Length: 120
Image (cartoon, rainbow, N blue to C red; front, side):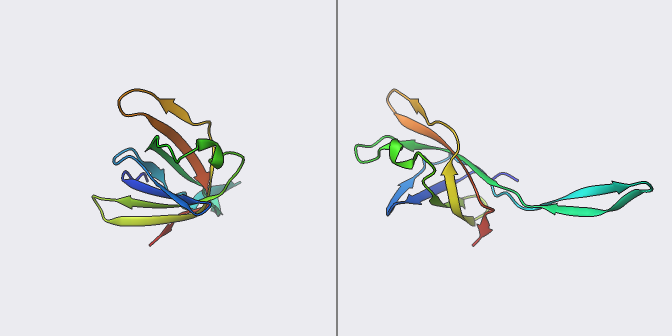
């Protein structure tokens, strides 16, 4: 399940909004894995998931991407405009090196992973 919308990333008393329409979000819901025995299906195991977020944020004078490095935890809220769904992930960390896009609309591309999302 993927959600496309807007994300608000909060960490160290700051909030940063994603570029509208740049969010790709997987809430990391628990899934079942079938267990197989000698006679076939014998049950299932529940596997908790990790949420994942990819988004772009505009480059501003007051945002230093290095403040998010080193395992700094953030709380993320994701809004899906089409379905009016809202999700919150209480703990996420930067999981990939940020990518800088230059030009007229300079932006950082960020990737996060974290705990399972909760629907609000």
